[in-house]
Image (cartoon, rainbow, N blue to C red; front, side):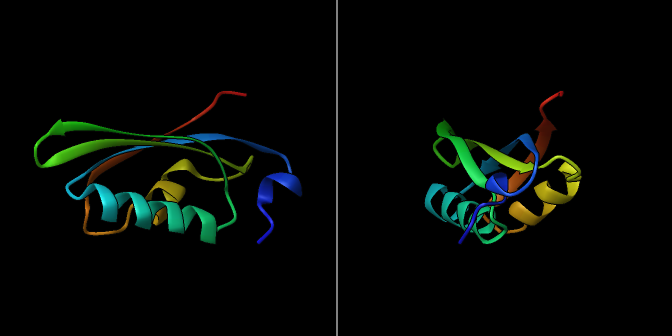
Length: 90
């Protein structure tokens, strides 16, 4: 699959999410990002409590992307408890 960052102007979007299952939340979110063709920049997963983890995923998305739409598409799985997205300022 060709990532969109090689065919059109992009910028970085960071999606921060709290997940209750680190494997399920991480894998499903990464699969969604790959399915949409977003290039991965960084990824981190840090335990918050014994039952929750903070995930931060930075991806390259087309410049005209709506951060909230991308956030909703990537974090629409049951393992994601909460999420927000922040687009880099150009």
